[in-house]
Image (tube, rainbow, N blue to C red):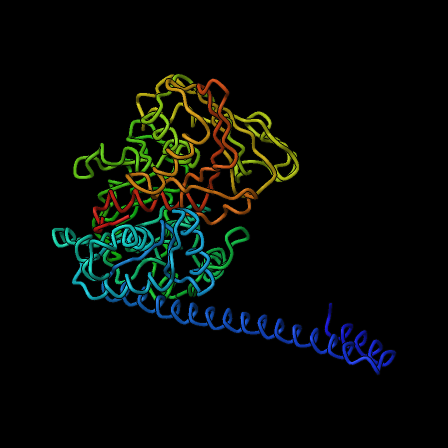
Length: 520
């Protein structure tokens, strides 16, 4: 009973029975119990506040260590593949909450600080380290090590054998949706600049102050992905964007071979072609005729060149011998890691892919003529059935799946965030629990940890996955397995812009041979 009501009830009761002292005692006893209860609540609340303050102070210390490691030593810390650089206190605490749910054990910010301090004390080369995985393993093996420093020194001991890396100049040929997201990622993760260095952007048409400012504005602000967490200004005199204080030249050209990159101080560059204009080996080879270019990466499926899904088949082609690569499509990058896990674990007879895809710039905003069927209808008002080559494209990364998959696509009225539905006939019987366990294992360890995110939420919808750097988001709560265990239906979400852009950057680092020591 609330205090005011209890007081009033007790007061009336006492007035009516003033001669009966037990009634006064009844009131006093209840008042005493209420005061004790309120004191208990206040005491608990104060303790919660104190604990939260301690956690947030520890997180501030953690952020400082993350920054020092990154800018002083080029060591990047992540937590189960989630980026930590430029995160605020609440975001980092939320990531720790996710990490604990993922491994079914508490992952404390205090433990992360201890492990991060141990990493700082070591002499390590440039590296990418998953502190969530390290903290989890430290809990499992705490009897084996006397302290965190000994544990980290043992786990990361092989880093000393890692060879140094030489920075690589990068040119973005085209500056559309993928080009701008790749630019954001490259400039946000520049650090000391010993990996990929964005040096130039190539566009068509005249370059003047108005054009530069429009390009800068599109980089700063994005209706889907929000504001760029950095600084962007223009240098009209030098036809350049100044991104986070670094000059990025803007070059106008009608043909790749017309550009002399060496005149801008750019040498042996990797050109990332995101125009969609050049799709085969012959056309893309035109980039190699430019002075200052030695590698080309296409951000679309390509013909006559290796189509790579990083994490699946990127080691099958030697960058010293191959000069032109394709990063395949966003849908191929979403389903191939999952299909590899299924094929390796259960075997795959046949399957069908249906991708529920966000509308794209090649559709019409309002009904109008279009060269392809159905895409002429208003993109934001209709679900549109169209074709996708992702089913066939998978076999370029996984030859064992040649001829086993059919595919189709439905474009839907959302600007970003897509869903692939895989209906698979399996060689071996399984269950929902077994299928989910396999996917969780692949998301936790092995060669696909950057590609597969294991999602545990019952409430997941498309807007929730926007901004996820993993190309495949496995929806464990939506998995269906037929009673006989031979058919599985899997739901794979993907940010068809952001997740794919990160795959492009991962592949770019592999091609450019700026791969750091990694522990994740």
